[in-house]
Length: 176
Image (cartoon, rainbow, N blue to C red; front, side):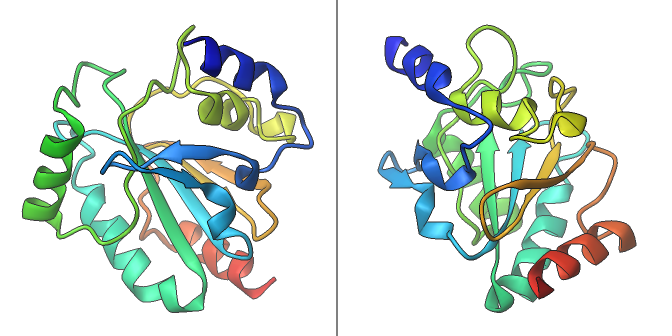
């Protein structure tokens, strides 16, 4: 916990997504710098949410655009209605069995409140863009990150990842 607090205090408006290291759903430490030069969608997910169907849309989006440089990073969270109660192993099994997820998934984290993970401290501060700041309201909120690791846009849970507007923003980011 002290490590998370120290890390959160070190984040600045100069921080990018690529400055952070996260724990994968398999328990390995992974530097997000691995995704430099890619367009990234960061999404907080839950297995028992009314928006869980978006997993299939996220997978379709990833399959369609991964060869052009898109990556989706999913972060399970149990912060909203206790809709992600499982262990990392249970979450991974659920996603593989029900949605055949191939994009990177990470260990369950807290995305709101006093124990918010540093990644979400940075994201909800707008990642250097104050117009994108504010607490996460529910599962499946999406952040679009450009190739340099800066937050480009933020989408509420009801904006589907296969919507015309979302895809247009992804394509624009990929073409930059």
